[in-house]
Image (cartoon, rainbow, N blue to C red; front, side):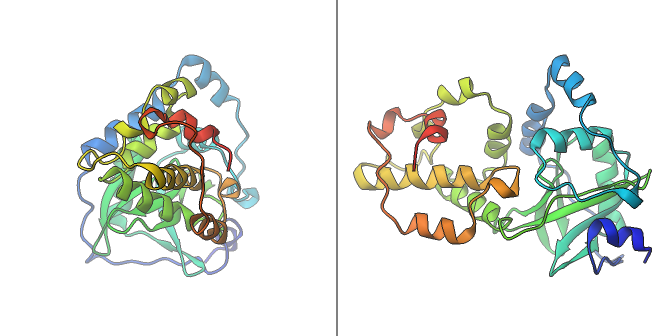
Length: 271
């Protein structure tokens, strides 16, 4: 393996070929619609993105530690078509099969940010903005990276705070009553004003009665914690031991009825 791959992606980078893996399934319509919201940026934002950072040749490229969602988006629109797509597992980078890479190339050309595929018998989403592979069944996630035609590498920082993203996905799925992929995409692109006008009671599982008293407090506290775990920057997320400590401690964040709490308020509540 060329040493310059190792410099960018870490030790143990290896290629995995498996021609028997099934070709990726078609993209889910709801994820596609959600990803379009992220890309509906004004010319002002596009002008800003065009000025963000200089990409370096692979020999000098560093891991994009702590990128914001905007920086990830900038990398995405500047990148050439992926020639290799990798996932991080057990301390090393591994290649996706060529069938999935080919599908991702097609979606890159269509500027789709969330790509739904079948891989190793699992139904997963490749989120190129958050640089994550998310298992739709259990909510687990792994960092991903790609290398484009110009031999430029794009990846995220891998650290102990990555696992809490999985906690947030599973938590939101339980509270919302459905997979939160579209909801998470909305949160990443929503303005403070729009979040202030969305009631929490309209977001939670509508098959259940609204929670009351202590249960309502727990729902609000857990939702706020889940939002913190979804930060696009791993450094901004709480560590898993902090999450565990928060869940085991009684919180009284509500000063008003659960029925009047908005998503915007969840972002501003003090712990």
